[in-house]
Image (cartoon, rainbow, N blue to C red; front, top):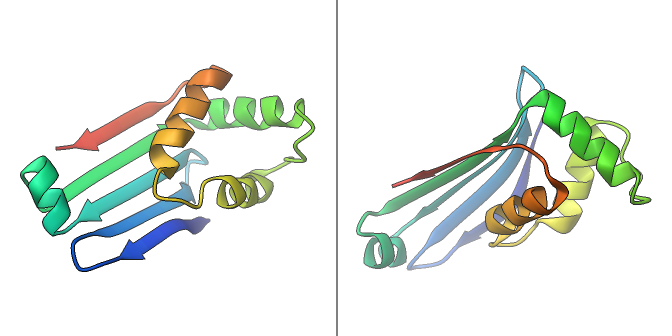
Amino acid sequence: MRIQLFEESRDEINISITAQIESNEDLSITGNDSGKLVKELKGTWDYEYKVRIKKIDKELLIKKLSTQSIPINNDTDLMTWLKSNYSHNEAYTKFLNFLKEMGIKNDPFIWP
């Protein structure tokens, strides 16, 4: 299951951020920024980032959210909640901060 959280295309930058439940039931948030502005800021045309939350930690996240009166019972509910709360260009950073606040283990990756 995969959803587009945010997508923007302008002359100077293209941004794409997706959320996906992997075949092993892990959750991943993946993003890619590319274009002239990225080249100016990072020295390369392409900037990639991803955070992976293993299945067991995803299940803990769902449990913690449900204790906060957020009606999430399964992966579909989680994806709907992500779309509702992280459909902006800061989705990756904000979600990482949220995971830290909730004490959810994750595996972030940024290139370059």
